[in-house]
Image (cartoon, rainbow, N blue to C red; front, side):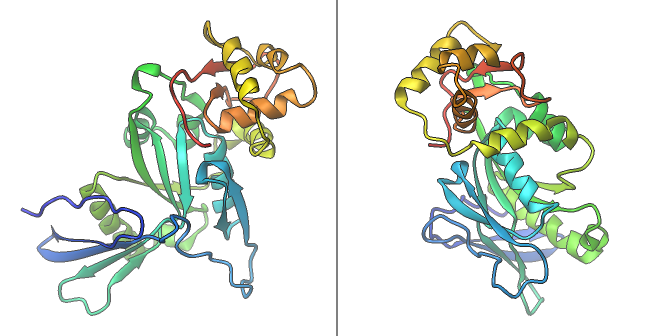
Length: 282
């Protein structure tokens, strides 16, 4: 019986053996020494849009993307999604060496997320990703319970969605991740059905995600939430009621110091929930 693989530390080579369908599998995960993306994707020779998204939840790193309808909206969604604690794009290289196969199968996942355990369970139960993001609410009793989620992002018309060879490689990767307690998820069409429900809130929050917030402003916002959920208007009043207040509130949301309801347009009557002891990006 193969033993479980332990998650890798930064810069560490992970290796162990798995037994899958009568084949011996040797799996290795390589991560970057600095904890950032293991590859940039951007070489200057691409014939499609590419870019970088600076993420607070990735330690203010510039994360590469190469799809305007796939990876970029997925990065923006993860930045604004309250159940996502931390994220990294192109987090590692997975090599799967199969007994009798001369060349290893290599897989670069799009994202690694640290997420709320209830959110991960909802995905495992079949709840659509966008719906799970929109309906998530803080729960102080499970605040410290997180899971690692490996996400492969695809557009709806990606030919690999119907490629049995590629899907077999993903299935094998899912088996490897499962042995170290990581959950694997394919996120197809981030801007598809359900995105319009949260698109406005995501755009507004991401626009102000890196605004600087003082410790005093953190205190004022959390004091407004000390008795439970309040309207966004009440939080904005606590933050001074000026034009900068909404920017501060959005920045606090991304840092997981409060939780704005993203299921709809941001408006004075939008609900804001206290995070309690839940902390996240700095």
